[in-house]
Amino acid sequence: MTEAEHERLLAGLPMPAMLVEGDTRITACNALGLAILGDGVIGRNPAVAVRTPSVLAAIGAVARDGGVQDARMTSRREGQEQFFIVTVSAQAGGMVLCVFRDVSAEERAGAMRRDFVANVSHELRTPLTALMGFIETLKHAARDDPKARDMFLGIMEHEAGRMNRLVRDLLHLSRVEADERVRPRDMVAIRPLLEGVIASLRGVAEREGSTVQLDGAGATLPGDADQLTQVFMNLIENALKYGTPGQ
Image (cartoon, rainbow, N blue to C red; front, side, top):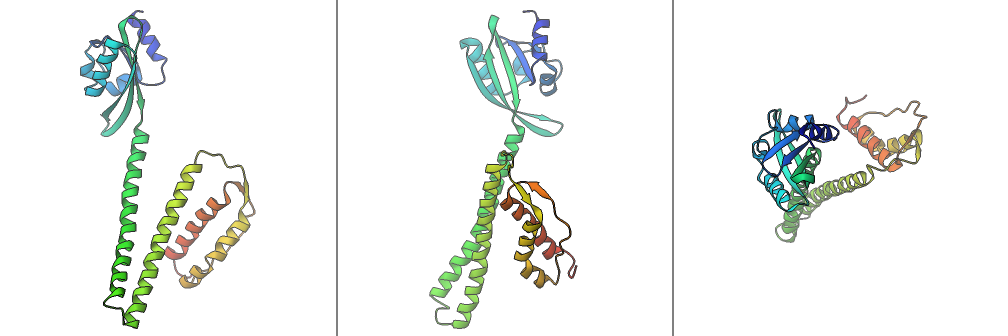
């Protein structure tokens, strides 16, 4: 194939791609590939365009031994890091095809998940440490002091409730993630659902000096009743706690 034919072949690919002659010269690169590798790479050594040792090693190995290898690559574009899985495969005539799959969204989601786990671990550790401290105090210093014991038990109840809410939220998040790609099949009547939520939050409304008024809401929506209940519970509870008192 001529280099013009190589260009036409790569232009039809939906992902960034470049074609390397052996491991020495880039012979073709589509527009998506030029966007991440830079203009002027055609005719150059792949080390000029890629500069990632694992990708260059994969190109060299495939050029020498054939087959297919994957390698990871990070690049920076417009001040933001991009992450790619580069699939390197042997082609006819000693050519090597490199296709770049953008996995930036997955990488960022993984980073967010790691940060979330770290934050939750910290949030759980704080009340747990407090509980352990109060238990130690009740076993010794406050053992025979009913007033101190009652005070500490009240604080322990509060901290245990905080831990329970965190665990509940984690379980709810896990369920949402498990169902996020499942299309809802049930139709949920909104009015009875909201009536149940309002009844559950009546005590919160009374403490905040507010009222919840339900108008209309005769519609039905596709969804999961438990998840919709959780959504409306969070929205209304936050409105009661952080809204204007008396409204």
